[in-house]
Each structure stands twice: as structure tokens, then as C-alpha cells.
Length: 361
Image 1 (cartoon, rainbow, N blue to C red):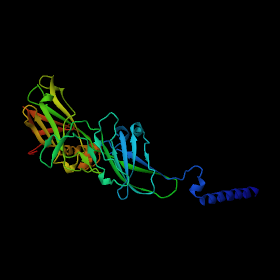
Image 2 (cartoon, one colour):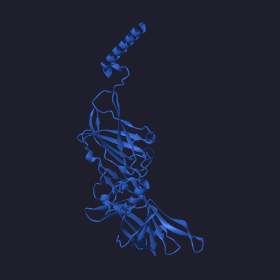
Image 3 (spheres, rainbow, N blue to C red):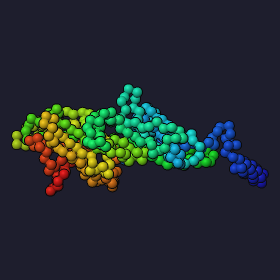
Image 4 (cartoon, rainbow, N blue to C red):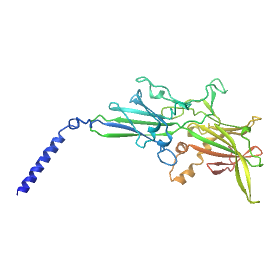
């Protein structure tokens, strides 16, 4: 009987304590620790690639996070640089009042003090700059190399572009003091691509000399709006940052020997490839001595989109054409020549062959 009375007493005390705690605010209970403050963290993910895996720690070298209020007016900027980005738990803490905000991320603006940067954005002014003004522009040559008209001038880029990423997210910072930790995830899209062009001569064993050909890609994709769409119509002429000849050994069935074939390789960095620009991004290869076009105005984006079905089958994911262009950032295309003329009947793209039937490029 005494045991039951003791148990009732203990239960009564415990209930009283719980009731007291429920009637006490978080601020009062944790006053000495400050544990009632809400924490808003922003993390970054780059999994819009063909591995469907987060490559942010491996590929992103810098983060510029711009915060705008609900009216699109600049509030604050946050930075992230160097080794801290490689931590799996990297995030930025938002020390902002409760409210609605737009988060704009341009990642890849700062790659080191001694490095010539590939992109730049305006310096925002608090309370003045609007989100629509935060365009990201490729740093091309300062002088136009070709003037097509008074309204359209061409600039050029012959550098290996540093990786550039874009992210945009609307967030609401809660107005409470529940002590919770909120995680806001900014998903990034890569805006830079590597295109490798390979030329192969089939008519002889002499191969090709890298100095005999001028490779270029023209596109109006050097400037991006805050929503990552293309801005303006200034044409950028992309030329190789590396161009060389290489030799590959090919087995010869008739002699069981090896035929060594010398081909031309050109590596170019270009900006974001978009379906809306599919008929405007053109590859041209000219004879350096005569200036004659060997391959003229080949629609690179159209060719790139032909690989979508292969990747859908290989990875089991259905994609739109734009999703493929955003996920794939390296395109290898092999063009075959015969007597220095392009055989436009077929082309190798990403190691598989496209065969044209009654198709006029």
C-alpha cells in the first residue's frame, strides 16, 4: 500500500513538472543557452548531371549568394570560397529578419587571385539594385573582331572557361522562436561546356596538321539573366584553347597489321547550350591557307540532342532535350574528311555513330 502511495506521489510530481515546462516559453527555458533562435541554412547541390549525383564539392570553387526581398530589391550578399566548399556539410547561415526572399546564386566567379576570371556580375547596391540587373556575363575579348553591321558586333573567347553554375530559390523565413533548424536547398545548373572536335582524314595515311585548320563555334550565349535565360544577341566566336594532332593505331584486317592514323583534335569551351538556340549555335572549320570552308555552319546543339535517347536507355531516366543539354557538359564529335572534304553522311557523337539518310544539314 505504501508502495502505491509513493508511486502516485512520484507521478504527481512528474506531471506538475511537465505542466510547468509546457507553460514556459522556449526563451525562458533556454534563456542561458540561447537555443530558441531559429536557424536558416542554405545548402547547395549540383546533381543536374548524367550521374544524378551531387558533384558540388568536387566542381564548385566559389559561391556568391545574393539575397533579394519579395519586391526583388537587393538585401545582402554571402560568400563561400576554397576548401570550405568541399566539406559535405557546407552551408551558409542566413542572418536575416523573417520574411520572403529570393536567393540568387552565381557560383564560379572567384577562382583565385592569380587567375583570369571567366565571368563577372554587377556589384549590387543594398536597397537599390534589382534582381533583374544581376546578369552574368562572359569575359570575352574587349575589342570586336568582326562587325557584321552597326547593330551586331562579334567578340571572341579562346580561353578554357572556369566552371560557372546558376541557382535560384524563393524562401520564406519563419517568424517564430521554436528553436528549429531550417534547411533551404539551392539546386545548381552548370552553364559551361567542353566541346571536343575531332577531324579524321580517310583518303590517305598522312593525316592532318593542326596548323592547317581554323575551328570556331559561333553563338549568342555569352550573357545570362537572373533566371539563367540568355540575354542579348551579341555573337561570341569561340575558338580552341587547345588544338593538336594525335596518332591512333587502327587494326588492318587485310594484313593483320596496324595502321597509324593522324587526326586533328580541337578543344573549345562554350557557354550554356539551350534548345531555343538550337538553330543559332554553329560550328565552322576552314582551311587556314585558303580560307575555304571545309565544314560550314553545322548546328552543334541539334547534333548534341541526338544523343538523348542513348542516355535515357543507359541511365533509365526520361529527359527533355534541355535537361540533356544541362546535364551533359562534355560533347565529343568526330567528323570524317575524304580528300579534305567533309563526308556529311555520318558523324560520331560521344562515341556512337549518326548515319544520315536523305538528310540535308
